[in-house]
Image (cartoon, rainbow, N blue to C red):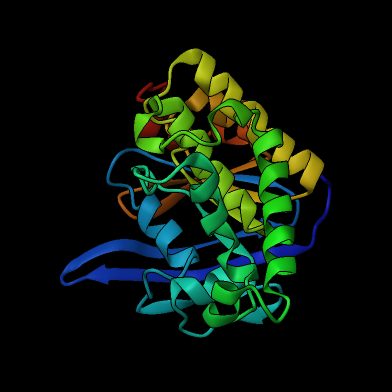
Length: 260
């Protein structure tokens, strides 16, 4: 972790309801700049709902979200993206008929300032902008070691490589805060090791702050700086991996091992 006590995001007393169902019950936690922050818990704990609150897809009925020291108003996901927040999804959300390169290019939309007309006729600096965006994308492709699939339609790729392309699309946005929803889901051991390495490298080399949901406790304990634990919409633990590992409430609710 880049030791930095600056709060990038502060989640304060969030309550999220869907009709009569309370998905998130008065949860508060923060995310420090430069850290890897994990959100864990059993199925149905409310983890993805919390990630959707962070990226503006859900709007809580109560509570506040502060980002870079400012209280966030109700915003749409594309406005959140312009603030410097990017994410991947539990179920891969790629354009299956497009190449890996073109999918990753879509992550640059927040950096495309020229009009569609200018891009069509390549005037008004559109060609320069296109070149600059492609340069960033090529660096992402090199970083993720996927040069050999850059021209391959993602629908023809194995699952692990599709997950890597989706990570590439998020990285192409050059986010300050990267949200990862179960980045290891469905992967074999080797693929999990590769993805863990890329996440650590993104954090260490780029200085990108990462918040992730992950069920693989080994991965969480190995790569996270701090962990918040949810169960049935409530927060039952928050701290370093060691503190969470030794929290009896977490042991009972999530790990399923009682030491009473």
